[in-house]
Image 1 (cartoon, rainbow, N blue to C red):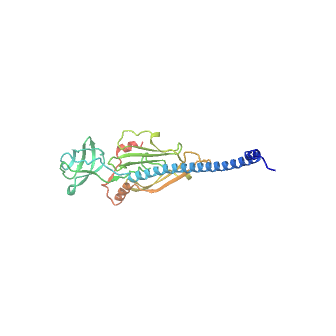
Image 2 (cartoon, rainbow, N blue to C red):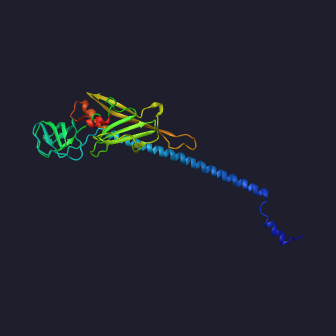
Length: 305
C-alpha cells in the first residue's frame, strides 16, 4: 500500500521521543558538569599559583633590599667635595670649610693630598667651622675626605639599645649617594609586619612606626622560633664589630589557598650577609691601624633610643 505524502511529512517532523530527549539532556548535563569542574580546578590552581607568586615576590624584594643595605652599612661619606676655605697652621686650629655637612665630633678626616696629607680628628663642629689638631700647615682649597668606616655600622647588640633578634639597626651611606642615613628594620610577627624606618643620620627625632613604612605585611614567626636577625661579631680593643648578619623571614599568602583551605607559607633565609665596610675596618683594627675607624656619631646614639 502506498502511504500518502501527508503521512511522510508528519513522520519527518515528529522529532525526538521523550526518552531520547531525557537521555540527551543527561548526557549534556554530564558534559557541562565535567567541563565546569575542570574550569573550577584550573581557576583554583591559578589562584594558588598567583598567591604563591605574590608572596614570593614580596619576600624576595624585601630580602634583596636588606642584603643591599646591610652590605653598605658602615660607609662614611661627605656630601659634595668640601675644602678648606682658609689656610691653616700647625697645632689646634679652628678653620672655616666650604661645607661641614656630614661632619661630626670625633670624625677622622683626611686633609690635603700628597706629602701634605694627614688625618685629623674633629673636636668641634659649629656651622661651617671645624676644630682639630693639625700636625702640618695647609693652604686654602686643600681637599677634605672622609675615610674608613664605622665600627658600629651594624649596631651591635652589646651597645646600649643596640640591635636585637627582631630589630636590626644600621647606619652609613647605604645608598652610595654621599648622604648618610640611619635605618631600623623591625620584625613584628605579632601584627605580621616588617617595618623599614629610614631617616637622616642627624635627624632630631625618630619617626614612629606606621603603615607608611611597612615593607612586608604578612610575616609570621619563623620555624623553631628562629629570630629574624642573628649576628656574628668580633671584638678588637673597645669595639665590637658585626662581621656577618643572618636574615630569616617567614611569610604567608594574603589569601587562603582555595585547594588546601589553609594559608601557604615560605621561609627565606640569607646567611652570612657581610657589611663590607664594617668588615674592612675590623681587618684594619686587627693589624693595629686605627686612623680609619670612625666612631658612632652622637646623633645616631640618640636615635637608638
